[in-house]
Length: 623
Image (cartoon, rainbow, N blue to C red):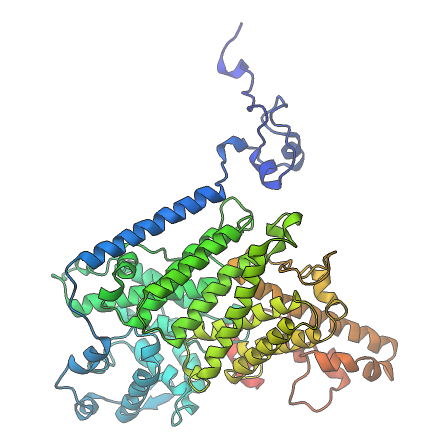
């Protein structure tokens, strides 16, 4: 009898086990009872059948324990840092004045020469004026650059950084605002020149981060180059060893010893990379590309002894807690979509951690940090509003969900209140602060949709939506830019919401974005169609639902026109004209061929994806 390996029967799976595919699909599996190495379902569908015993789900308790242990270790590091001999207190503001006692504006102007970028030429006094304007109004909001005297002394060392500072400053400059539109394409071409010898410079990283924080106008999110700039800045940072900020001698041949000012700039740039990566990833709904290593954790643990500027340190704290929360709630390896099942315990834990972090920081908490903090809070709370994460028995009775609904409602309104208190200053806000207002507006809309129709709570949320749209509209440079398109969508949806919900949102219901409950309205849940984009689920779910509804109305209008081109169009589409953002506000009356012209359709999704320069040309040319 041949007892060789070839004649041995296949090892059968342990009784009661299911293959990995069936386990994920939550379907009955016959792997344990079949003689083959594949279950019947995998054999039929052609799947690779693997034993599910190698896979183990992590329970919520285990994950909470792991997170608690991590936060305890962080607390111990913070306590240990506070028991050490305190470092000399660093004043960022003072350093900007006192580092160069011999610096004067007259001396700086003598050393400045005219600079040219394609068709734009600026004289030395114009360059100095714009640099000073940037440092006075924008630099304090995201202070990753050196002090003003330091920057002036080497102002033309990196062309991309110089022209990025000039272009960003031009946007809100009363004297030079006309240059902004002219500089957009040249600066973008400069940023995309990867073969330039300066493209590997440290200053290039700073410039790319600034282009992400104050991006040029664009139409659709797909046309925003910020993710590419951020990715390039991150890889250059790794290449230059910024994740080891005090060890630059290991990354730069010939460097000797440590230089305080150089080390500080490297640390600021790396923290900036971490924050910008988190900001962009949360907007797109993807995991962050930068994990908090030793350098970032050390700065977070220092708190009061950190030499970093307070705004940058605050952003790092918020980004750290937010990143950990979104990874646990929206990037779960055991879920196909990444969403954690039964997330309320995790949501509650991270909401408490976020509040504790806020209380532990100094009292110098800016309105920008507060807006960033509240958006992070809303992102965490958003995971608790998806009804698919709960069994049916919890939908109407879970008190934690009702509490979370109230917290989300309060936070949404608070974001817009902050912006209202600084209306004149919001034009200078970095993009993450503006996104916080947009996210709060969308969250208010989703909460209003599941509020009791006609209730005072729904009325407050509708006012929040109106305030958000008014604010975002003030940032729009062109009718079809990202801010303008957002406002058109939210105005369209809020007008729908102003009617009876059940009757006025049929298209959105058919998409699965909302689902009518047997118990009626008032449940603190909604049913999103977009599931795998972490905290950005509600953003894409809402905007895409609006696009779908608008396109559906346009298709209906074409059918009406074909059936009765003489009478039915204007009579039958009066309501469509009133609620749809298809019509330009500048066009008095809507001609028939406007509805039938795809090129004129404001949200035409059938057109090809444009490149960055075509997007800008189309944006300017149609405004």
